[in-house]
Length: 249
Image (cartoon, rainbow, N blue to C red; front, side, top):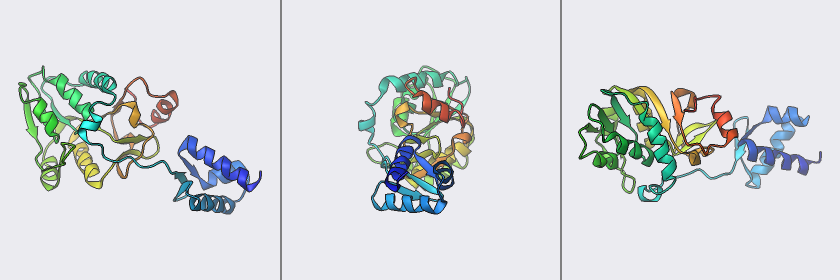
């Protein structure tokens, strides 16, 4: 195989798998690790890959924060399907923690018909949705993230460190079988991590469009979660890879 053919082969593998390891490529192509390093360095100079420790990843851009009104109308049928499934895991008398987001907002709408529940959230849209319900609703407090509706900052952190809940429904910006759950900012990730720490169990709620994406800041590994509720549009290959680390509900 000529060097140009080898590099093309490596690029194709990255497009399929998202990440490649130097040792693995060396064995598969029967060339030295140094040769692979030179190939990856050249591909990075050409802007075709991003070098990481031990290998390389593709240059697919990291996703960023999306304003509430932009994402509210996306994949609404899938979000309602996910929320209906999530509702089956809620039991009378529980204390429920709802992450900010449009999928958890759909779950909040289904919870409105209940009465013997306590709902805690860092999302003012969710809190407003539950104003006319018979639920006990608690807001974390904190600084408002404009255009999104989420609360964050020291007040939020202090509150979350001093509570304990039965179940946390986690929203996600990006889900990947290797990098786990990631979000656009360190602050967003920290709030999610504190919510996980406060909960007996955490269920991930996200439609399949979030799968295969990466964002800036790590939230957790998939194996840290109790389960993943998504829609039926999840590709079979993604389902198989994710199922190695988390139960698909």
